[in-house]
Image 1 (cartoon, rainbow, N blue to C red):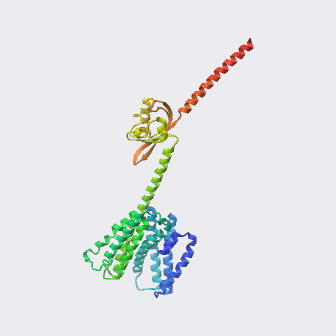
Image 2: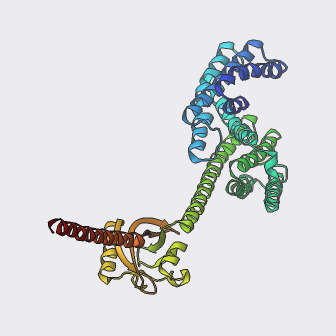
Image 3: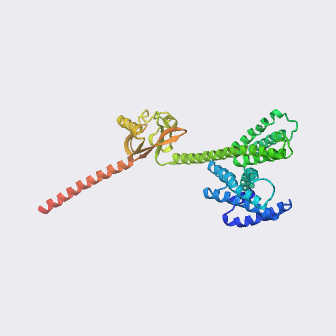
Length: 409
């Protein structure tokens, strides 16, 4: 599990050095336990194979090891936790049989190896991955309330774990039911502290549960160590999977909300500072939701007076029939592309505008964003230019006629 986390956090070119670094750890721990050297080397091969399968396949789908989205959490659970362990357990059990180490059958070796390595991967890999991404300098920016909440969560979880796993005066009937007591704290960690907080909380629960199972405390007080281990593994695996998935979903939702908030802030800045007059109206009733400063200056209506009214109620259209056609077109087509409309201001000053409308979603309600580009000055300039051209043409004709008259005279 530790090797898998290390492989996920480093580029593939570093992997051979990590595998070489893991070999002395295997030799140091297992040779001191009296295990034959050939069996130690065999277990090193099977464990390294599990880590390589998990890391290699996971990186093919997503290069980020963080469990901060449903897709990444599913990638980790399906491949890193279950598939890699499932496949490597066949090799592990075969190597045990080849070395004739122990008296258990092939499947009696395969099953506990599979469950124990699944549990180890669930317990250690998420904690290592998220701890590696922690930055001490960021802790100074965390609000005090966040520290208080984290302290309350830790104190509550530790208290419940002590009461469940360290109290020997258990009532047998409630021994299994009290395993649900840490669940509210695990959900709290998943919702409020994301994958990092939930994985740390789950690790604390695992340490207490393992200690209770080793010492035969409730509810792991079965008659055999084999049954205790099986009950512990199934309890923790079933707890880990939904809690880690929920934490990933909450992190993904929180990130989407932050992205949406940033988009709304950028839209608000662009809306307020646009050189064109912008107005947002609701689709269901045509009432104005918001206007920008350019719209206020263009039509002389205060923002507070415009909101809640419709464009027709403000008598914005110089020809009422244009207003009817405008709303009818939006209702049928859902958009408008640079249609020139004759409008008027609050003081009945005529305005010409190129109007564009597009459907948008504002505060979970369907609206239209209407862009009104003022072309009144352009029309006035075109009229003046046309008048000047006509005057010049007339003057040219007069001059030409005078020259012709002088020539004939």
